[in-house]
Image 1 (cartoon, helix red, strand yellow):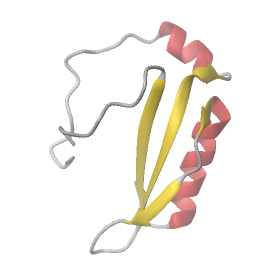
Image 2 (image 1 turned 180 degrees about the vertical axis):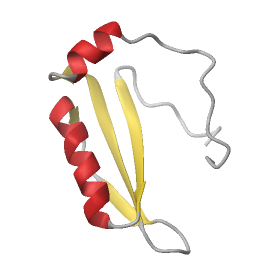
Image 3 (image 1 turned 45 degrees about the vertical axis):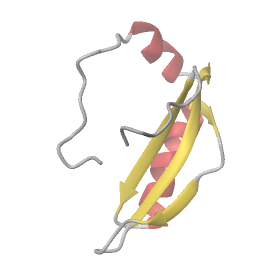
Length: 86
């Protein structure tokens, strides 16, 4: 992922990994209620089954509760990836 291009300003790439496609879709639906988004893309999640779902969120077009959360949140430059992230 170090070589992946960054999303355009005001957008975020989201990857959801879940045991079933239904669970991944439910999480994506919640995100879509807060942010405008692209069509989701889903893929198998590896050897044990499951689903990976990718979508791009437009953080400039927000609805509540995302709008109030973004207004009060602070960026953390020291945030790092989880040990199991690629």
